[in-house]
Length: 200
Image 1 (cartoon, rainbow, N blue to C red):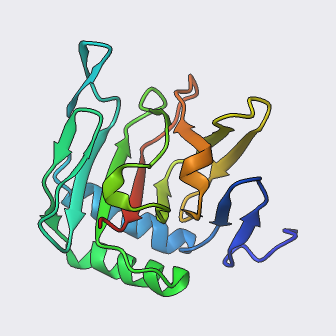
Image 2: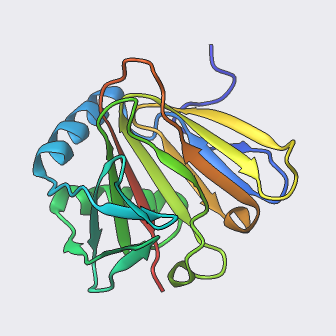
């Protein structure tokens, strides 16, 4: 039996961070349906990324949606937005109501298997504002989410991101913490991650 309501946000107590996790933001049945529809309806792209002068295929597929014409860029990638589909807009409205935050954009990531990943980074681009609010919805296979403090090397945290879960990062979290989805040798099915954000 869970010690907290799985459909309610649970605060993750870490220094210099404001992080909340809702394990069952969507029910299992809702999550399965959403995954199938988004997977089939999204125009997934495999971008090239430059790391230390070398060009690699990004180890996941992406798509970017917004209710404006503002592109989003990170590393050497610039992503012009597509307009929100009805299904994505419905998810956005539910997350906005729950978090009491308005979002303009959504970056989608498709992790095809355990070898797809997202390396250590912070969502601290200037266009996201001084204290970005990032709402991250997980659909599909479970993956492990890692956090590590930027200065205090002994401060680390791991969290299993469940199907239908919502992770909310806000306040000064991006100033003090890196996060990643590492590769795994385990046989893992596909996962879709929707990260809603406000581009200033």
